Image (cartoon, rainbow, N blue to C red):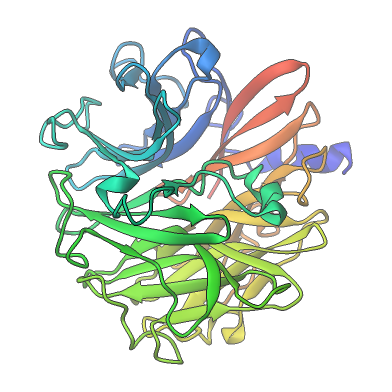
Length: 454
């Protein structure tokens, strides 16, 4: 990639954001070298989620930025608030999501001193204080051990997974580390739906859907247990992962991920499944009326990792397709019935192949006008100088929206190192915010937040 191509993305950055469109991290005196997630607030401010490396011995932090990109010193001590956990526990926070209480949720995993990993949800108020109405100890935090959910005697080796188990996918997890962990969506009634994946044995994994009440307790109206393991009806398969989740207005739950069929040698396919509020599979969903929609391609590995609800009740899901190390972004648009939307790419899955070195979509956001913003990791399956952070915007028919960045997409590729994607969000005025980090050996890792013009 030429120097001119690398620098071109700066033309489309919002220069009202730190005068350049770019905020470089870390902030002086604040632990955490890069943001894992970004969340726009109603007053045009932004929240950033930080994990400090073990060497810094600092808790997870949330920082708030003013519209101009400066730290909001009215938020916590010096623009940040801590998210402390008990000594001996390491909180790996991955996602920020708006909460029904006007604050936000932080989701991730907690690793204990014995190596065991729990799912974790933190709820904070608008001022950054922990929500004292949430959690068993009323401390704003909920942790879920795998054996809080499943029978430990029948499944003594079960564990939540935070990395891909299959060697072929190991390359993928290197650029999306932590994405296997947990995501969350707040429902209209304040309940919280989580998805993760449980490993029972090698090559035997199942996605899991968990629903919490507003106080953080398990909502046992879901499957009588508060959780349901993902089984794909009518499909014999060794394993499945659950990555993305969306909750419809009627309370039905959509989950996406990927799975491996039992037949040896077959590449993994992608799926979207829908559940009723009680946790049973909605058999009216999909053209085959079995509750699940599959996306298959015998020549490529497929996954779906992020979802967004459409105004008409349908859903968009994004991920990647990979063959021989070359990646293409994957976008699927489904109607509320589970059929493919005929307006979007003529009713077919859309493979994003406009970049020279490939791309893997990791996040998607639907704008109020129906346009779709996707962002993720540019480059092939191996991290090198071609690795970048790629962002695109599509119109409702699946064509690139050339009003964004002059051609519909933009690539951030800093010549000083290797760019890696972490998060994407869209502000109310359609300005797009991306966070990530730069690996530049022997220099220390640095982070960035970039804001693009609408």
